[in-house]
Image (tube, rainbow, N blue to C red):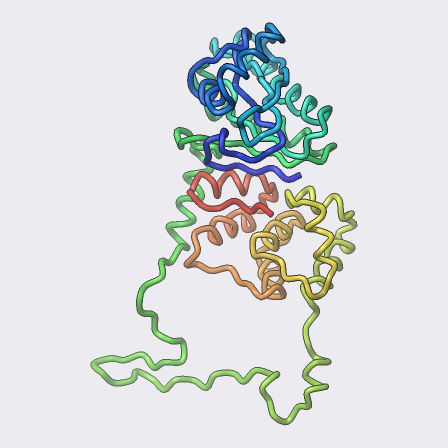
Length: 332
């Protein structure tokens, strides 16, 4: 855990292993395969692959990473696309499963994949992404590993046209771009240079009332973020491990949340809101206790709000949508 989607050249990723979209003969090809051979040192990687020989479609083998930032290269042979009539989906799932099991066998804590078969092998990119995402998330339900899917370029909508359209419409209705000048809420509205009405008095914060002692003010502080978070977990009958997995969160980060003085990022709080299946009001309350708020001038916040309102509590679906709209996923 967790699973990230990024837009990056896989040869630049620092991970214990990266996956090469290989061919059965393990020969240097074009696209991702050619780039990996070039970055690893073509002669050294060719010699290692020659020593292995062949790899059947749907399987994977492993070699050193040589000059790459990664310690290992896992060569996964994906299927060519023939319209879905030749067991392509089963073979593609096999690539991801075999690669992840090899990484686990070699003690890897992190691995990065390209979108296998979605290049010159012609697999439809939306379907290739679905299979990659499902295969990785299935593995992470039972295993601990940091997995990255490197999608180079933007040639397909990961979330599908229908959902993309619904979120786009929601953004159009709710997203308010920030302007250079914004009237202060307590500043009187003007008409022909004269106030329309007198400004109302701003409410005085309880913490600023002079009649209260410091001891009284501290005693009336609201429940902390940490206390509220773990109370919500208990109320929903969830375990810590279930929550950090649902939030796509590293368990070491999750353990820090028990400390009252730890300040989580906004992305972490939103991921937890998704994991706990909070409604919009509950999510806003949890954010407030960590010192944050959802803003209509943040497109990322508007997208997350759509998922909360639609009660779609799948962190991977949220991250895919954020990625498709060019926003940073809720990773930790």
